[in-house]
Length: 402
Image (cartoon, rainbow, N blue to C red; front, side, top):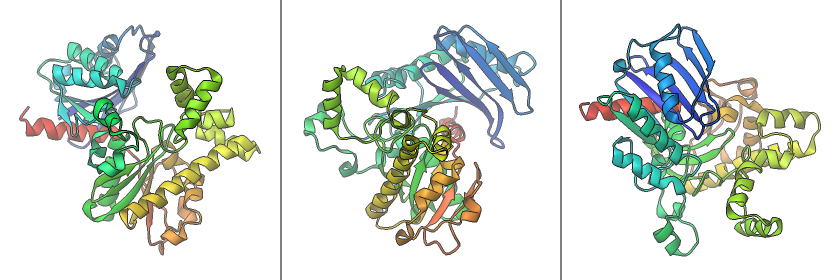
């Protein structure tokens, strides 16, 4: 079975074609700058590459080009799209409507689009991509949607509700939804497999750290709390997002700077975080480099991230009445040994003790980085959201006899 995994953004369309017999990637690529001009970059399993500037007015043209490079030319991997058994799509926001992987219908696409108010940067582009895919992919090929928020639908009400009037939840669906659920679900199960244990017997804090970061408490295989909230803005400081902030500070700044709600949202989402604190960059690598060269604001941005992660680990250990393991994943989590070391430093009281000889220099590999006598295990677990989407898609399609 071959499954095409699609991750659509407002101006991009990332894809992977996966052979589910051995879960190997046959080809992957990205259609970028949709609605601007257009560019595609495509790579096959055996190293063949195709790259070209294109015209992508909409996602439909991007899908048409995707089909073209998969089935024709020097970097083709298929004779026709009929070889694809199913298409799996990543969707950011499913709210309370979608708590599991779902087969795509016109009604489902409309429901995803209707949730755009809760995720304006993501959901409408997802809906556009779904409609574009239906125009290009054979009708007989089933399509499936996997929601980032679905994993967090197990959070108890006391964890996902805000201390605002209850009518805000009833009328406007304001609550914590959480994000990166696909990643958190993948890495926690991967850790359980590596340990040879049932995930239902583990208490885990999963740290997905990248340009966007979130921390999740996973108990009995279920998300019971997570740092991102109503939107991905909440939680720890990120590349351009501020993370948690007193709501009154938001209204205060909006008034002082004469910003509209949308302008204020852009200010918090696109001009804050590492970029806003350092004034240098939103990339942790740039921040780390500048800090090492004595830049005080860059050093502060890095310290804020480490401090906030540490707080979440401690609070989630309290919520779960214990802790078996901490996971680091995502671009920063998998590749930044200094972030991992600083977060775990001075946490012996909680049973966390790092093995520096293993942690130092470790990049993007599954490994235990805690000391042999550490009561809480600490692991680096590379995430693979595309593979989990493909697995979910395969499972649903087979269960429906498609």
